[in-house]
Length: 163
Image (cartoon, rainbow, N blue to C red; front, side, top):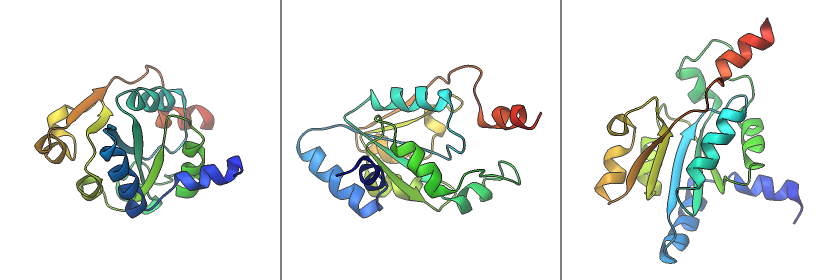
């Protein structure tokens, strides 16, 4: 299989992701879930995602669709990159095992469907405030926050490009 095809194969439906998760859980593997827009990939994202992957055996990334990003009101021109473009760039990262697009404002339904063992977000959130905290902890899982790499943000990167 070509590398290009391997990238495309990482972007999966939630049903396909669940099949993989169930097989991995039967083998005692720990499933990690995180989510975000990841509009313009930068070193802060890579650092965060690699740390998330280190918390388990299989990292699933819930990726906001373009419509979902627009509803988050990050900025009128966001996302800069379309969902499949963002997905392809993220799929090239070895730390990500699967990517599932979600169209809702939050990944709550996706987390409930996939039932990960570990839920990860940046430390700009308190663990108890993270969407899906109730689901993961009710099943004996952990919710972990990761500090951001200082000096990197998509918003600041866009401002730097414009100036």
